[in-house]
Amino acid sequence: MSFRLMTACCLLVCSVLAFSSHADAAEGKTRVLMLTQSKGYTHGSVKRQNEKLAPAEIAMIQLGKQSGLFTVDCTQDAAADFTKENLQNYDLVMFYTTGMLPIKEEDMQYFLNDWLKQKGHGFIGFHSATDTYKSYEPYWDMVGGSFNGHPWTAGNTVTITVHNPDFPAMKPFGKEFQIKDEIYQYKNWQPEKVHVLMSLNMAKCSPRKPYQVPVAWAKEWGEGKVFVNNLGHNPQTWANPQFQESVIGAIKWIRGDAPAAVPVNPELSKKEDEKAAAAAKTESK
Image (tube, rainbow, N blue to C red; front, side, top):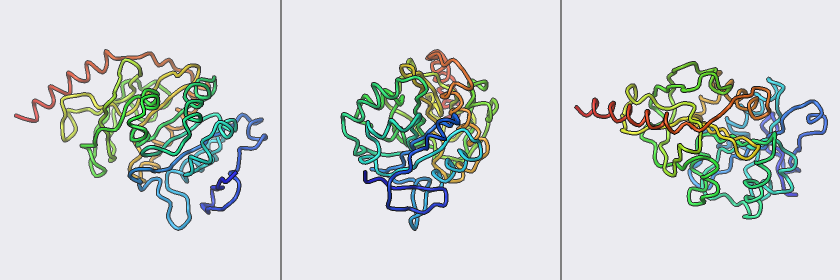
C-alpha cells in the first residue's frame, strides 16, 4: 500500500499508514481516519507547510491523546487510503475536504451504503466537507447540503444560536455564542432529513439574509451517525476550547457514550426562516 504515515511530531514520512493498533481497539479507543485532501480551494487549516501536519490535523491528533478517546490517522491521499479495505481499520471518518475527490465509485458506494450504516460507525464533516462532491447526490444527501457561498467571511464575527444545548456536541457552546469564522450558506439543503443543532442569529449578524443559515446538524444514517459542523475555516478555531470540546461531544455521541436523539426538525428551520426574513427587512430599512 502506498500510504503515508502522519504522526504527532508533524513529520511527513514516506511509509505505510499507521493503522490504529489492536491495543487501541482493546482499550476502547475510537479509530479515526481524517481525510484533509483538497481538490478545490485549500484552506489554511488543512494546508501542510514544510512537510508538517496542518493545524486541523495537529489539533485532532493532540485532542485524541489528551482525551484518551480516539486515535487519528491523517491522509491527503484519498485514492490510496479511502478504500473498502482500509475502512475496515476505522470506526469514524472525518472530512475536511473540497472538490471531487479521487475515490473509486465502488469504494464510495461501500462507504455510504454499508460501512457508514453500521452501528458504532460515524462521519464528522468539518467546514468544507459540504464543498465536496457538490454534483454527486449520494454524498450531499448523506452530508446534508452543499456549499453555496459564504457571505460571512473569515474576518466576520457572527452570533450563533444553539437550538439543542443538551446535545453532547453543543453543550460547550451554551445557548448562544460569538465566533470569528467563515460561515457557509447551502443549496441541496434538506431540513426534513436532519436535526439542526445551531444556526446564525440573523438579527445579530451582518449581512442579514432572509433565510435560515444552519451551522451544525446531526442525523442517523442507518445504524451509523453523521455530524456536520460548518466551523473550522480559521486555524484559530481549531485551538478554541469550546470547539475542541464539541468534537469530543460528537465522538462520544457516535460511540454511544453520550446518547442523544436527533429527530428531524424542519419546523425549527421554518421558524428560523421567518425570523431571518424579519431581521433582513429591519436591516434594509
